[in-house]
Length: 522
Figure (tube, rainbow, N blue to C red):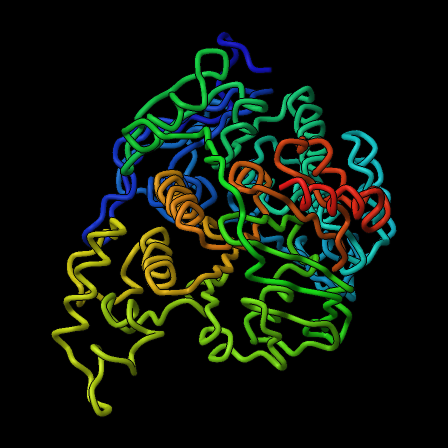
């Protein structure tokens, strides 16, 4: 851990960066000591990414200075950052799947791979791996590695260059709780060796656990500096958004109604022809939220797409409102009362070059009052847009603003407003708060609970374990396309669900009978 008397490893002073019409950073000071984890916290658009890109040489500041180990530096490229002693672990891994770990490290050395001797690289990788407890095989192919192993390979790749300061951008986004624990053990080993760490995350529990110092950005400026000992989640959220944020979710007691969605023996192929969903059974009843949780890539996306008719079903059955849907199509699923919030809001949930008002009636554009005899009623579309913008607190200049110009959180609000405001009795909601800030996430959670109270049946698919545990009446844990376990809200613990997410146990082990009992009791 860093001490107050230590010479700062990194000093960023008075950093200001302007873009046309936007001040991304304004007079920001940021300091990291040797052996310290300094967390950079803030909502989307708060200025975190800009500050880090300046540090890594991707942007140049308009004002301000950077010093490293007490020496003023000018960092004009990532290669200069690495030469200075700064490495970055990106949220989306920068590894070539078809190469080994050693070959990936060699790629970053600037020489043709065919001319690079891999033996000394393999040896050095083993040394670094052993020194920091990373357990990385230099001869393993990246495509064969689990997500946690890939992240360790990324860390090895950076440490191979003898960097002193590591920037970790949302490093836990795709990890299970046990993998997060392993990562934090590695980070503590790195700080014990005197490395400085810049940790970027929106998960406040993790920030409280791993940080030594915390700097909070809001609207491009520093809104607070604190330590975990002097903070609570609530105070950090207040610094981030400027108002109190509700974390505790109380699910109102209510008797669930009849099943609205039933999935039985579902088998679905993935994009590469592999079996991505394996004999999955799920039921969702009126007035309840059933959460599907798992690490990315374990069949959740394929499950959702099969239910709404975007992906072919190999075998099994989907029933909506008690009626089997043979060969589902999106139009048929909707006609039977199923609304869908897809995980990729820009690709599948909205059309960026359409206005906000147009996106809000996308699924009803050919129905009255929005169209008569094939002609759109612009006044009706405008009126509906104004109503939903007000009802769902969508921040937009007006109904005619192009959707792509909104923030990620407000685009998600557009999608949710459209899907939640219809007459659907069943909602399939995938990754509803991925990439949105804490204020928008809080609002989306409130809307989900409101829909539950109205008697809607909600299938919530999320990789955020905290989100699923906070909102779900029951949970289904998926691993490698199969159901690993089922847990009632009252019985759930992070440790138990985390192990299931990691594949510990047999699919459906000791869970089928208890699941049936839970359904009967409820």
